[in-house]
Length: 422
Image (cartoon, rainbow, N blue to C red):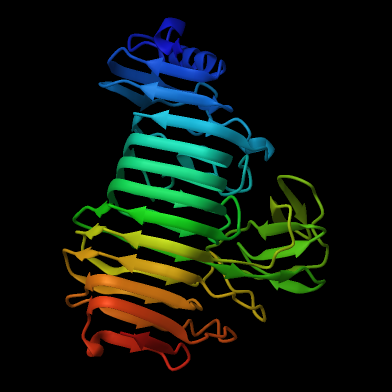
């Protein structure tokens, strides 16, 4: 067991001194404690390796400051993230992080990894636990926690406030998010198997997860949803295809995504298949980012349970199973097949404010289970995306137990049929 205070990590020291001291302590691996209460300023990102447990004591607060390099990284990241190498057995316990107006560096064409944008980022990680975590002051770009390419993660006892997503998950298998309090302008929890190319480091299936005992705290204004569930489908690259920002293709054993200006909605003709091994490269004046070593053609979420959660914030939509189709992303490339999201369970949800639609889906969905929910005035809505007119929607099987829902508050587009079993 190592005490980082003995390495020079102290409230009185400068941000660069503290960053260097904490990094030096963390490099040892094992259990690293911070026991002296106080506000610690850090300016450089801390990189965590295998078999490392960081323990922050009571009264320890970390406050971010601008990097001496002029380019801000993440506050914490695992060492293998930038190399695409897995780190295993990482725990961060008791971290209280104040953003203090600092966000990670540019997440566009010049980024280290396209879509990397978080205070705490764990990309390529197995057996991760983050517990007793507080993060306050999120600005409009950075998530509090971003995790992708994961296996077996637990996030417990969270308190996150600010303007961006609280917990943002990408491709991975096996997660638990419990005992979370969120007051975020954007989504408290995002399960984004697919998202904008500048918002997700990967595309791929998110499977086998539980969200429980979480609270969407009331606030004056908001966007997004308490929980967003995203999927997508794309095709193999072919000469002459028209692509826009965030479009995704499979070619040469890899998955690539387009990184251009999302605001102009411009289509580009791709004549040369991307073939670089890592990072971002330009072909035919199109920027392509490598996101995975696979030629899979779809992603979505399956076997997800959301239970014992309290929705205190007024929202248009509480939980969304979404298909994006705008200038920022087409999660359906014309002519492709969207594999349905499936195994979504909502149980013991407490609707404590005006939520127009509790559950909304415009993405193909197969099986949904609803248990012990009083929808009050909220609706259940299944519709389609007119621009994505080639999407095929199978009949949604909805199994219910102890549900209070007026039939007039159920809407299903004829192209997105449902069948409810009471």
